[in-house]
Image (cartoon, rainbow, N blue to C red; front, side, top):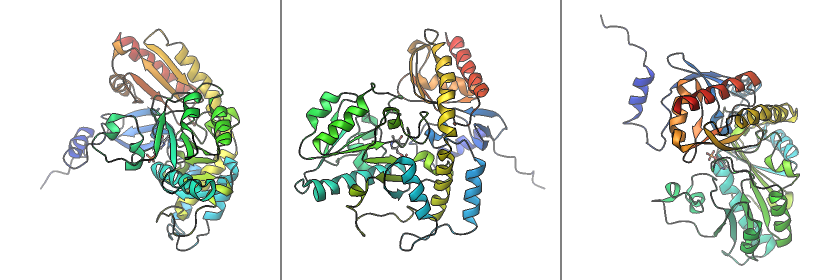
Length: 408
Ligand SMILES: *Cc1c(COP(=O)(O)O)cnc(C)c1O
């Protein structure tokens, strides 16, 4: 008789990945098997508070009941048609999403990078068809230290060498200017400019928040120059900062808003380009598309996400809990934290490099049952599900304090 197979341990599973899985990530050594709300559980049954929330793809927590229910209901009816046919979920999704964002039309895609690519194509087409830029001369102005995804065109205008090196030749037509610098933007914009493409808050760069007035300035400048303002709200949008969009903090309405991550409720990849009618109107049949974009399962989950945001509850939670987060981090400045940037339930925390790298701090926090992700150097990012409670958040901040004190 053979012994019953021993269930695989975290260690086994991590080792098993090594020979068969591309090494394009360096995950923390935790193997998640189950999750609910703000908590995940590993294969040994250890519980962790998730302060990364899938890079904000899990704004509503793991397996939010309303989202899981919408997915189950749709799984039992219809999952995919392709856009060769209509499906009965798409109109409602587009209508409600456009209304939530305050723009007119929706181009449904799947991943964030696809939304960015689609936004770039849309801006270029608009530049040729409406603005009258000579063929193949359109430029798009972007910001240094951006993160817009991983396709060859998108890494073409990244300033992060590890994202670019070895992946050329690159797509032309992009100009990079410093972030949060209106004068540099003004100097870069000319008659060939199709769009200015920026993140209203730079997430991957370490939650870098521009000065008050920057987004208003970008809006005014692009309007004056006759080019589009394309806001990549893939990480900053959908409640994270305490408002529906990060641009809402300045009451600014871009011409094009790119959404992804939380739009899929942590269940399926859903992204979208949301734009003014005159802009989206430049696309005609055959000019752009996606087999899975706008599929009924995605539309059903996306609609349920929009319904959650329509209540305003999650935006309010993010704003209120943001105060708890800010208070906690303020108390750590000078005690292992050299500085932080926060808006809503989102913070980039600079740890004193003498205490360790962001990665080392993340590993120590993991042992305390708190999951975070480092970004550059000694910065860690905190972006819990918006469903986390104030006590859970205070507990996690207590763990950070403990880890920093132990590292001293
Ligand atoms: C994550 C992200 C993307 C890319 O999204 P993917 O779904 O990973 O392709 C684009 N822009 C921003 C601001 C992001 O945070």
